[in-house]
Amino acid sequence: MPKFRRIATEEAWSTPEVAELLRQVSRGLSRSLDLPIVRGIYDNPAGDPPLLKKLLDTADMRLRTMDENNVDMHLLALTSPGVQMFTSREAVRLAEVANDRLAEVVAAHPDRFAWLASFAPQDPAAAVKEIHRARTELGANGFMVNSHTDGEYLDEEKFWPILEALNDLRAPLYIHPRAVPEGFDSALRAYGIETAIWGYGVETGTHAVRLIMSGVFDRFPDLKIVIGHMGEGVPFWLWRMDRMADPHRRRPAHRPPYRMSEKPSFYFKRNFAITTSGMESVPALKYSIEVLGDENVMWAIDYPYQDMPDAVQFLDDADIPDESKAKIYSGNAERIFGIAPN
Image (cartoon, rainbow, N blue to C red; front, side, top):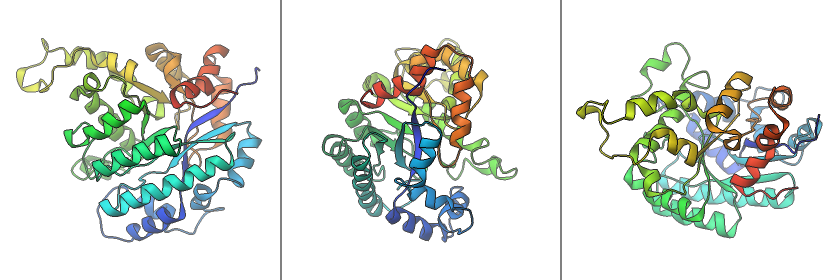
């Protein structure tokens, strides 16, 4: 087998300051569907080692496991829900702290780590300021947001300054899943399908479709969005979205207020890239390549929530051309996230 450079593009990390406040949040009375997983990570000493220890680690266990599996680089980001469950003031402060910490981690191991910075959507003006600081002063490779914030999505006009800053800086935005907001959750609670088994993909796929249908990509044509888990189901719906978005087929009451200049699939192929995180299905991979092209798919592990050996074996064994594997393993990440080639 050829020697591929392996860059994993959705790799979770945390910092003690965020972890402590999330532990406090986990003991609250909120009905948020994020709370079970937050409690399980930040207020649960079980595990060998505990999951939180893996999230906080960069220089020890993580690097050893990467070496054991011939993984060259992790693209690190503050793990979900990031700073998006805090008050606005706390979120702004902790995003700055997390970005400073992560920049230090990458500076210590520049050949092993790249990074996605955080910002606080709760305060769009502060978010824009932090986006510029993290990109131009700290050298972030892009940004991560954990989908909705208090049930609000980035297509809403109050968040357009954030999208404008990302567009102007040519900074990719990774939209990571979190639990669906209250009011969207009643059908998911009964059977335990509110998290990764189904709910996360529904929530984040909905975010992606909202962005497309809102027309923000006509306003911000250079905005690049990345979503994981083989596109959160969206690639498999593009044909139907194109058909149903045709204004000649939609009843007036079902037509969006904005008339897009192109079909939904056009924007998805131009403005989105997807990763394989946590979706180690060769048929899904081959379909995504067929629909989107191998230049729009990147490899990811989703460590420490998923196992490195399984993710490596999945792509190593996939019956796709080596040229495509090279793009998916590293070439596309180098181009989209500005990671220096070997």
